[in-house]
Length: 198
Image 1 (cartoon, helix red, strand yellow):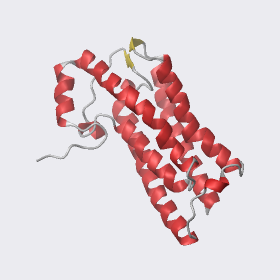
Image 2 (spheres, rainbow, N blue to C red):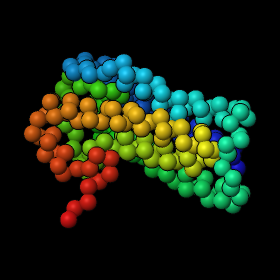
Image 3 (cartoon, rainbow, N blue to C red):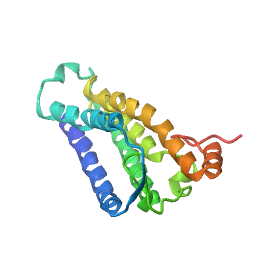
Image 4 (tube, helix red, strand yellow):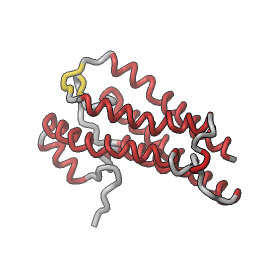
């Protein structure tokens, strides 16, 4: 069962790469007009990659971390893994939809491109940062698919610092660019979870 869950996890990584690749090509053809990327942000992105890819790869191809595996019955492993697969599918859908809705406005970091527009439709109608929402879902899926106290939690733990550092700076960049329009948008949407009305 562990082998299937590990394979499913890495299949998810391949799907994310396939989703992002055409957007990355398009991004490279568009001139940057605002660039607020810092060395710290680049370091935190690298740290996140360690938690999402390198530690899971070590776990998959060696036995070094096996002593930290969850102690679950075979039936519980299947159920937990099944739930992880469903959440991973949701994360991938949100990742795809975020890229699709952003179109040429997508950037992997704190940058605005020439002709950048404020996207408030699609998944952005309810949530300002659905791509970060997809990363939170991915992290939850990782805890359920890679059933290990170190490897399973590495994605969430190493994504958290990037999220805490980047989101306020990203929102300030958008306020600087779009002013009151973005402020109104912030008031009617949730950051990573839709705002409940009423």
